[in-house]
Amino acid sequence: MRNLIVSEFVTLDGVMEAPGGEEGHPHTGWVFDFMGPQQESYKLDEVMESEALLLGRVTYEGFAGAWPQRGGPFADKMNGMSKYVISATLEDPEWNNTSVMRDVKDVSGLKEGKGGPILVAGSRTLVHALMEHGFVDEFRLMIFPVVLGSGARLFPETPDKTPLELVDTGFRLRRGGAQLPHAGKPGLSREPSLGRYRPSYAPPESGSGGSAGDVVSCCAPFLPVGDGMSAGCSWPRSGMPS
Figure 1 (cartoon, rainbow, N blue to C red):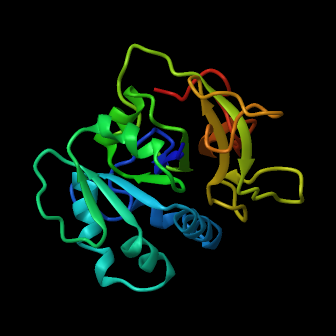
Figure 2: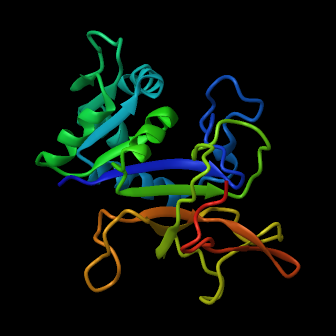
């Protein structure tokens, strides 16, 4: 069974729209104020470890219009790897190694095939459908210390609660080896840090509570603590904020 990983840039208030300069949002490009070498290295490692991209049509067309003109290890992998786009209308895709899937239910067969991880980026509507069908094995949410106040959010409005369990933390940006960085204080890192969460439907990991592909990852949010903002994972077992 192949693992399906949803990897997104998300603000503190849950907005995923226009992180990289896409048109239509007043604060488009909001990730550029916070990205650093560690995050860029992590994203490179992530795409290198993946064997396929799964995208919705809007994100696919944005990627297809950008990556073929770029070079370097990241672009080379993006252009060369297998790509699957969910669309009822797309015909004859031009981006290299692209296959069109007409129904999100077909992802079940893709996951059951042989191969490495399947990576989903952007594609908000598709992500909602994947969640509805229980296809997501892992969320990697790089949460940035900024509140936009408006914009499309990753998680859909729903009357249902989705409990998440903290599995691990990463991007251990520690000061003095004891504490995650504080936001809003001079001289301290403003970069996001990483935590891992497991959805309620994912099976437990042998020996530690979850298999490698059955976790939900999230860059640690910044929460008020004392006189500052402390970076650390929250919402264990109680779900992400709505």
